[in-house]
Length: 264
Image (cartoon, rainbow, N blue to C red; front, side):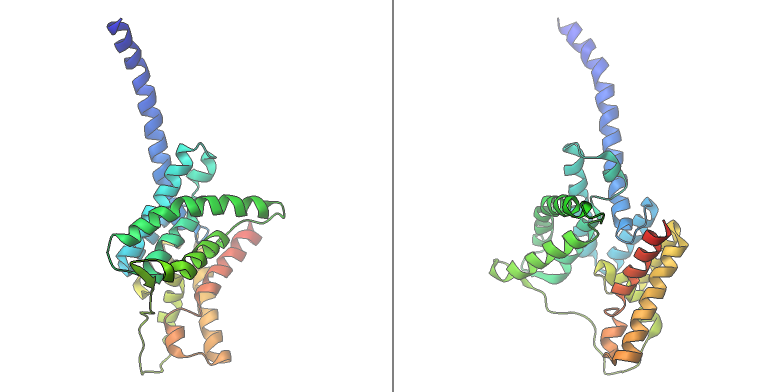
């Protein structure tokens, strides 16, 4: 009896182990692609570049983004959700922004708390993404980053009532110099898509996008340039705001989106 049981275990274990390995690799692949899918890059190496860039700009934000995204993909995998959506990072890209947003927009009294909040937010952003995607699919539209916007605004509006946390005061650099720094504004516009305020992060993100698509990378850079120049020349926006990429990130995401959806 024991021998038969051991033989059965010997026959089953490799298969289970093989399935476990496949699920693990699928989850890691989907997590890497999730970082790239924020800017429509379905490439794990693009995602790795972007993750490294986030760590360069804000290590806590990068780690929270990784935790939140990994948990979303683990939940999706264990729940038997569409493997194609998981593998291509289409369930986790909003989690990237939620994790980064939690670490950037909130102040915590203990360094572990942003990771805890990011972990709790993971199933919430997955549920929100599925619901919004289901509704918008009736109109032929994708969810894009709408789930992130809804959840992040809900977190920020309720943060004042939490203990041990509060909304963060802006830490963007200010200067008495009114010089418009075009290169800084352009690349920070890319990094601010991921809520990271670092010009070098923006450069690495640009390179990461180029690994997947030179057209998307060029579109992000051109969009950031157009948004920054337009704000400076036409709107008279303060140069500190422009140089920090805050007038370029929307355009830096919009132009690649147009290239992706209209060009496909």
